[in-house]
Length: 355
Image (cartoon, rainbow, N blue to C red):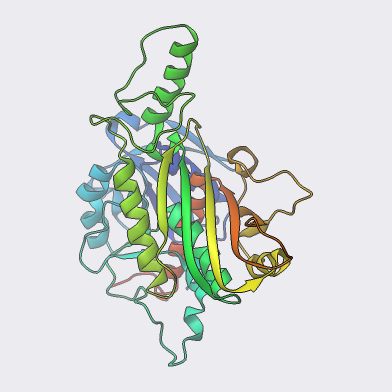
């Protein structure tokens, strides 16, 4: 990269994902660059604080992408689909956190941390076994946080202890679907305690004080859609090198943070210490039995995925099946992965522009 200052745009800066991304960018290795916060007209003029800086959100329009080097799309999918080609024509490298560009030609789903865990850079033939971004890549989609969690843990284990199978139950938080879903969960809780009718526009079901594997037919929140996205992203990240997971989605009555119960089966018996040792490394915080287990609350604000390992029932020190209980801040994990994707794209911009 050259020494000049790059310009970064965040589209959807008023969204939950956009605000978290602004915070993380401000304290990241990209924090010295020039930031422009963009959103639809109804959000323009809002004041957003990121680290020690205060910025105004500007109205999103065609000219917003002039001289832009990187553009993150973090708001609604409609805004992404409506404006990403404008950003592309302006020469910007594009990172999509809305998943709107998944089906576009040559767009890649990325999680650089998983590549590191799977040793992509150490392929025997000197080439990555899966496609990585190049100068012809129009955009990248930051992989779903759950796909990152599953693939990173499975990949870390696979590097030292051969995996036979993987299964997981995913506890889905309201914040994964934006402010409207969080507001409805809050209002349902208030109304239940005051014996009033429950709002059901987002979930078409009672999610407050409840756990559900599926929601009402009219729900705007689609667990099945999220499940299929996680499966696709995991499959793309693993590229056939990891077992296909059995997956169960559950809507949890929590506002923030993912919790996963993951069952892994190894091809050969191992101890808890061996499993923990295989997981130790960047982006994973192994929590021992002497500490409180990971939760959506303890994971809030944490950059790492918190994990605890327990051997499945049975006698003896060794076993082949282990439960891995995981917690992660869903918005922070998504933001950090998006920044990792942008850093990866940045290596393709030695002259400042991808032509």
